[in-house]
Length: 463
Image 1 (tube, rainbow, N blue to C red):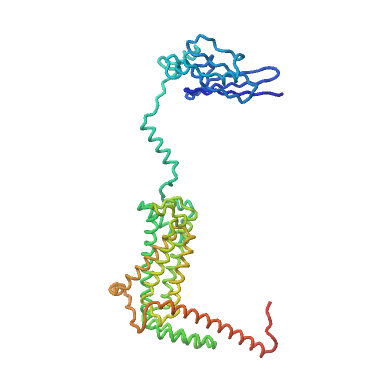
Image 2 (spheres, helix red, strand yellow; image 1 turned 180 degrees about the vertical axis):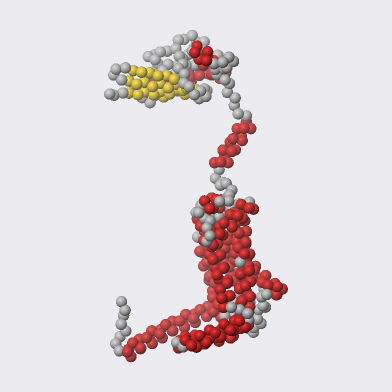
């Protein structure tokens, strides 16, 4: 069975009503429905005619074969309303509003109100009897006051804004960021600091980094106590290490055991144990790696609160630095921190370590700064703060009164230059080291080839 559907919607100029005409054309019968729907009334009503406000409405037909609806005449005109057959969509679209219609819409008192239009319809006796006395069929609509409207709009804007809510206890645990690993414990401490102090995440990262540097201060003191006492037995220790190397090359196990006992006795003579030298790496390395991995994951997840740092020049801590100043700042800070930390280093006793630290200053610091341009700005901020705190800690621990209070022996007085060597000396040392390693590798290859020749036949290649 074929059917044609026509839909025409009239939208008035001032009142929120709509005339919906739906025609179902079938070979056997045609049905037509008209409803006037009010925006503040949940029940549709059938109206016998249109009011004056619908004369300025425009008709839109979604199907060219649907029947058109008439336009109601103005009040007082005396003209009867046109029938469905007398009206067409083209006539309604081409009709121009008259002056009387405009004046009636703009302020005429003859336009029926919403209440009058509804009460003008015949109300069934059953409905009127079912309502108690004094009940108005169409109660007046009371609009909200401007203050209430403004408060509602502000609440809606705040709920729809891009600023995330403040972090609460347990939020990081819900993101699976809290655990008993070093990274998980560090993230938990950052959550406690942020929630407890209410600081922005820029200052939370700074305060959290300083907190963990302060927590490692006893470990740093133990390391310095060990290293300061090691200076007293450094010549004897180097001699034992040289003899141990020679005994290992010869394969003399008895000599190696004897040298090991001598080294333990030497440590005990100054109140030390060989295991005390592992205190620093065992505690400092997990914290450093946990700080790096923990903050990196928070920024890359990301935690929504980190997108608002609280600083205008660094708005988002989860993205790279938009200003481009943090990478050079890191290079300068690392250069200064390495210089201060190695100020009391004995270059003659540890030439290799001194040159390695010098290479970390340059070209290490500039190269590392390029790597920092790819990291989130929140992580770079933590690394810079840690480097500054380490440098200041080295300056404080060089004060004689502080060293005496903490039980750290004063640095030994040695002849010659203290601190890091010059870059010219470091580059010459690196070139000579490379040449020596190349020569040693070449000599070892020649010795192995000569041994194979003496044994007979070329060296066999193992698969």
